[in-house]
Length: 311
Image (cartoon, rainbow, N blue to C red; front, side, top):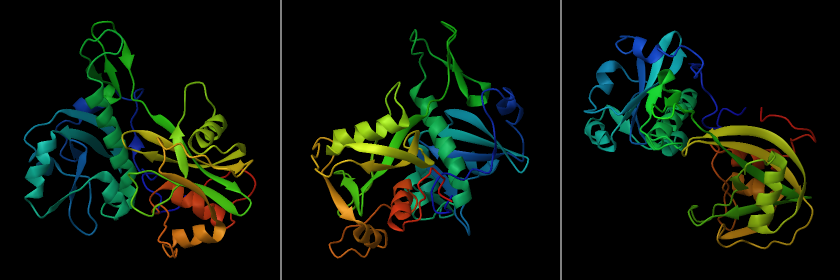
C-alpha cells in the first residue's frame, strides 16, 4: 500500500464489540492514557515536529464539556480513547499556538497529521459521528446508551443492540484501450477530474455496483471489473472499494444531477494530470485519495490482469 494513501495505516491493537466491555471504565483515570479529541468533527492536534492527535489527560481537560467517549484499543500497551466535545470547544484550542485545529481532510492532504495516525483519527471520527447520530433506537424510538466500551449502543426499551455502520462505496477507473473515463462534481476544485464513484445498494455485488453507477452517471456500459484496493474514508464513515472496469462502449451521456461533466482522457492526459502539468489546467485528486492511485496504476501500466493490492 502506498505510504501516501490516507487513513489506511492504523497501528492500534484494535478494540471491538466482542473484546473487554469494561475497558473504557477501567482506563478512565489511567495516567498513561492517550486521547483523540474531536470538537464536533474537528480533531485537535498538538503542534510539533511531528504534530500528533494523541493527547494527554491535561490537554484534553481544557475542553469544558465531553459528550461521549469510545475505547479504540492499545498503542504500544498504552490505552487509546476517542472523546467527543461540543464544536465550540475548538475555540479553546485555537487561542493556543501549541495546538492545531483543522478538519481531518485538510490534516491528511497537507501532511499536518502524521501519516501513521490518520487511521486512528479516521476510526475516532467515524465512531464518534455514529454515536452522535444514533442516540435513539431505530426500532422503538427510546434513548439508547453506550455499551461495550463504545462499540455498541443498547436500547433499554426494546433491548435492541445497535452496532457502528460502515457504508461501502465503489470507486472505479473505467478504461477502454488508451482512454480513461473521469468525471467532476460541482463541489470539486476547478479543473479537477476524478474516478466515478457511488454507494453500493443492498443485495448488490461490488462488480454490479461498478457497472450500475457508471451507467447511471455517464451512460457507459462496463464489462470486466477487478478489485484493486480499499480505503477508509471517514466522511462520515465510508469504505472506498477501488476497482478498474473495462468499458464496452465510448458514448457518454452525463447525468447532470450527479455530475457537472464526464469525459474520456488519454493515458498521456492522465499522466499530466497526476503531475499537475496538463496544458488545460486539468488535474487528478491528491495522493491521499484512492482515486489518485487507481489512475496511477492504470496510467503507468503497472497493473496486471488479476486483482491485487496497491503495494
